[in-house]
Image (cartoon, rainbow, N blue to C red; front, side, top):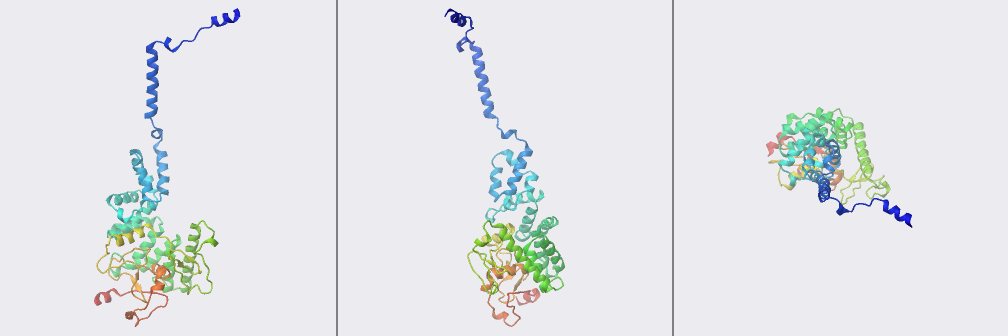
Length: 376
């Protein structure tokens, strides 16, 4: 027992807190409080390098489903707002990131589109080019922006320039260049543009701007419908057999027209395919002249195909339906689509057209502008 007491007696006792000097205790508390404040004030986000944040913003802008997805990030803080306008981020922005609605169109949205176009965003060049050419009537700047996108092998820009060449849009009837239109359509069709391939097929069938080749034109039309069907099937996650719109009518598919809420399209294979989704630029054109009540000009009309939105730039620029004469189209591709979507069940011969040649399949006839102006 004596040994155990001697052991505890020889040990040095620990100092209690009150045994420390008061100044030393206050200094330790101050250091602890300062360290906690520094931890609260410092943010991990501030330590991230700019290159990493730009990379993240590029991914965000390229996958944005609407302008709000991108704008909500920009207004989060000053750093994101500054890096969000980096040239690399703007060049990667998807078409839906700047697919502004007409009701939200303003000078700031125009400026944002221009910044994206200046950064090298091809979709922004095309969208802003369409808006300037048709809506703002700035023909030179709009055509230049579309040409900039076309040089970079942008298929919709190539097709839009082909439509301009076919119609002589922005100029007179003498400004039409059918050969240039066919060449632009061929390039766009090579890049996989379905409407351009369909337009090229009709040009070959009719001998419009190119030597007539009915068999080759028919082959292009069948190929366009095949690509359209493949595009729809690849965009759906369900099995083809479970899709309600996919039906097969091998015997009478040319005489059957199925109507529904989605305005189905009857292809050459007898498959009831939904109408293709319009490009954001075409949707903007349609909304611009519809929601605002703005007319293209006195005596000017819009393309009757709902997914187009292109207006006439001069009177009697577009071709009319050869049966009823009440609808007009900027291209043969728009006429073919609208005929299958809706006009087939609405078209009826008018008295003023009965004296001429009427095509049973809803063809289009080009109105002589000089004669039309004389009659008006």
